[in-house]
Length: 265
Image 1 (cartoon, helix red, strand yellow):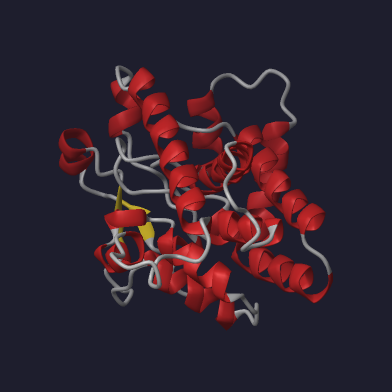
Image 2 (tube, helix red, strand yellow):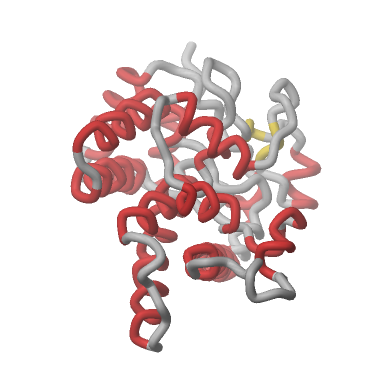
């Protein structure tokens, strides 16, 4: 699996448009400031490190987030149609969580602090599908914890529903969520279904992305070729993406990515 340069550009534009269309005031401005600051990294990061997980390719993170947003809207609609009580949280809170549920995968602020870096081991790429590896220079943290920290780092206030929604998106894959989802008393049960809606949306998106990968896994060159480093300036990247996207007779996706990410002499 891989995206073309045009798809990467379009996905980023769609993400920024989503923020502009669904948030207002100071919150929108601070979200745009954070996403602009992380653009160079975020636009190229994968959603996971292993090919059969989901979207372990350049641009996979933004592609995943956009799909989770779409799934969250559909799951919310289904719960509403089936008679669920949706009064405990707002649509903005739902969309905020969908947008930022995995932002902790961006790693820590500062150059060289991204979570995922290309795996330079051909054996691990070929035999285990480990296309990326976790940056060993970063402190260990759970993704949802870092997501919440990054939001406060950029001065973005969040509601209790949004904090809990981000935390619970991983469902029971995170042992720390067990007391929330498996309460045995009425008083300790979740007061809203936001965590359920978001977990289902995330699972749906990840499963769809796995199925998309499974359909293309026979192309072994896609599974074993090392991702290229993306350590260059935002302006240079934007110019490259624009040049490639404007070529009407681009030869192939692989050639385009070689042109985009190839080593510079």
